[in-house]
View 1 (spheres, rainbow, N blue to C red):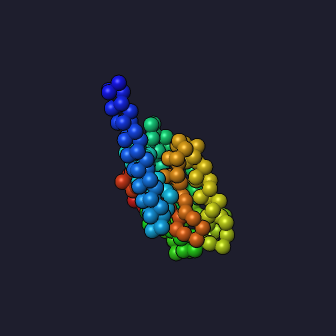
View 2 (cartoon, helix red, strand yellow):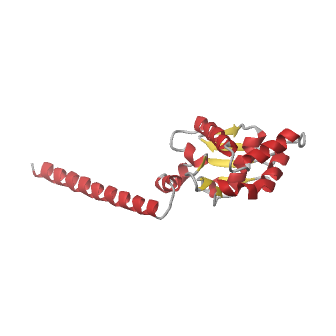
Length: 184
């Protein structure tokens, strides 16, 4: 009987301690939010970063996803250009500032499009870097769908381009999980 009582008390103390820790974590997460830390960054803190996917950008600009197995992430050149632009800027890019990144995006796109520039290609870059158009949001949505199809729920958000309206769009994946084998 005494052994059962001790086990019961041990389990009750453990449950109470866990409950207190959970309340403490909730309070700290709320504090992080109040300081402007976005949900993706909070998830990165909560999830074990060792389990996060890794990306390798090869010499020929292929995006290789390392998670459980190695997969090539297939994207059309404009989508890949947009993705690589955001990947290069861990601080994020505000949509209203996209015109400031037009030359950089053109440079990336030019490397991925060996057949050269066409009027249609130039127009696509114009549209993507125009903050008054929805083109950038459409491209981000397509990119995010690709990663959603390749990664388990919850992890796709680390490789997706995300950000609240009016805030910078970012890719939450820690840059230690990104290897660049090419020059961009």
